[in-house]
Image 1: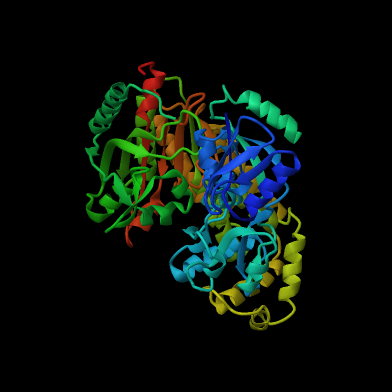
Image 2 (image 1 turned 120 degrees about the vertical axis):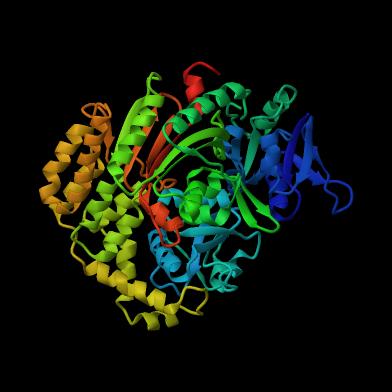
Length: 233
Length: 367
């Protein structure tokens, strides 16, 4: 049996079902409308596991599911050495979003990460604490800023409504995913011109740590149906 | 990934090193395992959060499992230490590893620190010679450096105070330091984005531009924004660092030579870069002190950029001992400025280092 984890609700779930459906693998929710269980038709030996998109990276890393659909941003942020733990089988072409850094639009002197670094130095001198950047993508943002040599900042955790933190004075800048930028503009923020940390989309991942001894045959049949070439796993 | 290791053999090795430090005149000190996160974060910045185990205490707030001994030892000394003082310590430190592999996330460290105003270069030599003696026979490669020379060169640059401060601030972040230097020396073209920004800023008074940008939000004050906008315009008009002076700094960044030859080279460029003269004199004094302790300074490796990483605080002499395929077996250096940061207004010249006994034991084949 091959276990595949898919997002349990919302547009990500619908788009995932559509993507597989177009390739002859029909996924559907079973039971009551809000019950998190599902079934797969069109191929034998595949079990559907409905999970929160945020939990799929961890389940893949632990090998409790063989395949999983989730955002590449979540996999890269939650898993250390992500490409050692999972393999990308296919980019699914939806769920596009960029992880970026945004600052108040009224910061007329700040356009790049370099400007942010200089502003952070002055901010720390003036306020006695390091400039706060609100985010939930701690690993990705920290790695990006370390690689860029930015200093005098701190990350503060924000699991939702991150765009509001600046107005609420709990952060000076944010790092978050955005697709259209509308929410940013509505909250008087602008994107730093060179701050695309990651261009994310929904990806079908395979676990490298799962027990494949009884699932490899199913995987090969599934890959043929989906038109995928399998990497070494 | 944890692997079964012979902890008893490592502890035995650590005890030998610890005893040697005590025999060298150091007082044994202890330090807490749980340290307030705030001090470490202020010192190392956000990078330490990726490397240290952070936990929350209901009464004391955010705490870190001891990532190194230097901070608590310096704090204890600044609070009520003798002057001069020599300390040694032995205990676990904890470092998260961000990559799969067999690098340890908890290991013993044995260290030795000297707080002494009298003769800093003699203390540098004392510490290096002590460490070199303890790891002799392991086939390690010793490397030395001196961040003080680089800092003196930056302080002496003929440019604006703002540019000197920006370079000094990033001395431990080589990539950004290099980008700044390239820009200030006119070697890197001004980016299109920056030119557009300058053009916008030239289009009106900062206050008017801020007002035109929409609702004002955030803690960063309008006058701070205006001040930096003006600073940007001013900086765009500043002359580049002169080519010969910049060339000397690039040369210094890349300098790698045996210590004695490095001193000869530095003495040669001092007339062109007079600000480094006191630092070069200290380098010469240190080499004399090392020579007096039997160190072969004609072959001892010197790298002017050694110790320039964001997890460090060294601002003078630095050293490390290396073997193939493992992290540095021993590292150390001078950190005078750190004692001022942690000393609440007081400071004292300080130098010290650590040895990783699990690597020593591995090299001896004991584990």
